[in-house]
Image (cartoon, rainbow, N blue to C red; front, side):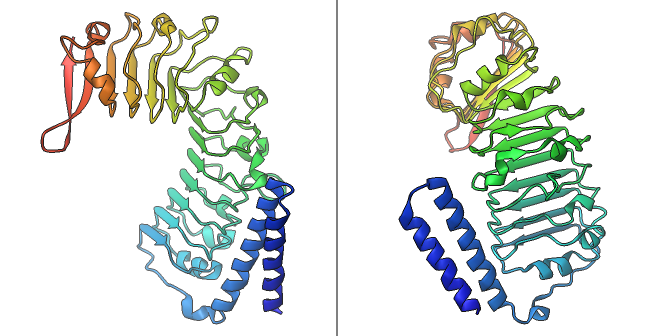
Length: 373
């Protein structure tokens, strides 16, 4: 019977690939069929589960489970009684489909940090919501994971202070994270969402303690997601479209710290009509930007600017007199043009009090030079 089920799923995968009518539907059907085959394979492998149970000492404080054939039941046994566990890291376990029940996870009374990476078959976080000691959760490349239960409530505890979700872009249910899911995270201070190109709507950005927001490669996000936002301390984005979207929202106030990460456009534009006076720190990292706007001079409260791993950037605009610190790391072209006394950009940075430049020394290492104006 099991072989018949696998054959049917393989036929589903084959027909989905051959049809090619709807790319999104083909992708979803293929993933579902592949997951079903994985589940059937796991049942065949673990016909005697008692031989695969793992008992660990209750004094354990850090646990990493990686690249092993661990079943749902075996994980439950692993975690039972780990009352001292502070950090749990689970990575690349393709046989895992669900976290244990609330009864099992409630014993993790000391758990502070949870990292889940590349567990492609993981569908449910089980009773994770009951682990009220958790303060930080990071989920990366778990393409089958459903973050909400049947009632649309996120399966993460309200005690969370830092949440990072990355690379979960294949699952259609991630197109919308409901307000019920994030609205109960009253302790949330940092939210990072990366590489989720299909997500259109995000609610819950009005969490009262939310200070740091990272939205990287979420091109379909709409302005409605920010209708009830409050002032943040820092905001990290990856495109000019996201910046324009923010500025189009009535009464939206830019935070003190504005960061551009993985910005793949050659230039950036600051609209002259926008109010940038709230920005004190501006940073570009891992970006392909080649030029900066002249209007940067109008950021009258700007105190710090940083360029990290921006290999295409070689020239700088005139900076405002308020600027006190400039940092250049991993930008060889820019670093050369900012050297005293003959660098092309030296006259533009000479007045800045703190200049932090990274350079490679003759031994192949990395060093820093700090210059005071």
